[in-house]
Length: 162
Image 1: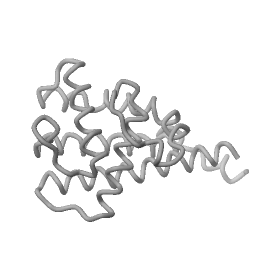
Image 2: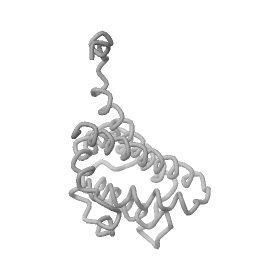
Image 3: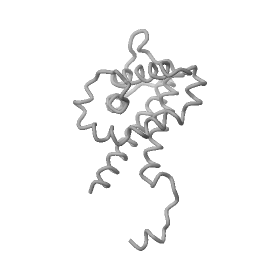
Image 4: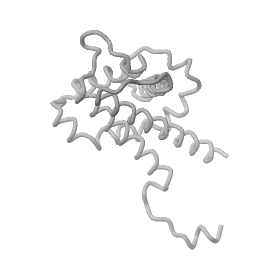
């Protein structure tokens, strides 16, 4: 039952992060959010700030339910996704670790506020929203790959035998 539980947690996280990535993409194009969009972004922000030990973002993630199990399962994939978009981070001018950490902290705050624009440094410009969308999409896809045997081809004859 543990495997099914873990799989359902990973699938849920992947689906919700994919939704948040789509919403961020729309926001980068200047589109408005719906109340459901804002709730999806809040979940993603709370979840990601739980996953990222270096976030330093205080939030109400505890009120979003039991995210600790999902966060633990996702953490290695989260850091792999950051490595996966390293080139895009550098192209966006985020070359130092502290710059990436600052970007992620701003992203989490933005998400926790449901995509509502903040004042000054808390605002994410369109190009940063696109980068954030790409990161969440990368993480979502890596979680799906993790559910399908890490992307390795399956031996269908073995599956038929079971």
